[in-house]
Image (tube, rainbow, N blue to C red; front, side, top):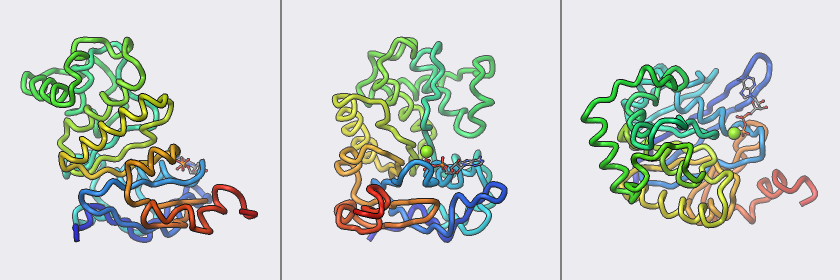
Length: 251
Ligand SMILES: Nc1ncnc2c1ncn2[C@@H]1O[C@H](COP(=O)(O)OP(=O)(O)O)[C@@H](O)[C@H]1O
Ligand SMILES: [Mg+2]
């Protein structure tokens, strides 16, 4: 039995008077490919923000590899081995692929502050590692290209490669398959399997259910800020709460 890499324990979060996460608990085992799903507004992105330290929860605990990280700032969570990609692509379109990947060494924490090219002082070592990573995923052909010239599906992969620059043990992906066509989605699947096989635990928010079914073994379902299901992906279609959440109370 694998040890949990991430334990979410009774986490609640509100914004002003609005409760967005309510007493949510789930565990992600090391080496898992775990999905977090739920209708729009369920609180999935907020949960990612709590996990990565962008938001502080109002109650509950987040444990990473057994350590309580409630008081550890976002930037330091990356150093512990947690990385993240975003729902909307945040590559810098006019930099080359390699330059974007190199940003992964720097951009994980402050994120928006770091989207200023002026701040990027490339180091030879970063470049070597970026090139090596791109090569290892068969993306060497794109190295010198400007991101703005690349198909969307390739950009998605570059974004993940950028997150891997920080050498994460856990990678959080917010809707990686959004906006991809069928062929690109299939390619992304194989790519993420490869990432997982290198020892990176995957936790992803995703709306594309066939994609989740194929990639993930375990899933947590949220609705209106609460956890309504937690277990094997194979159990989803028979779960009454899940059916209700997706299809309405008549289901
Ligand atoms: N910074 C914020 N301030 C106020 N409300 C927020 C904030 N972030 C998210 N919310 C609200 O929390 C709810 C859940 O949002 P979100 O986590 O983005 O859902 P999901 O990713 O599941 O679609 C929504 O009702 C959203 O409007
Ligand atoms: Mg979201």
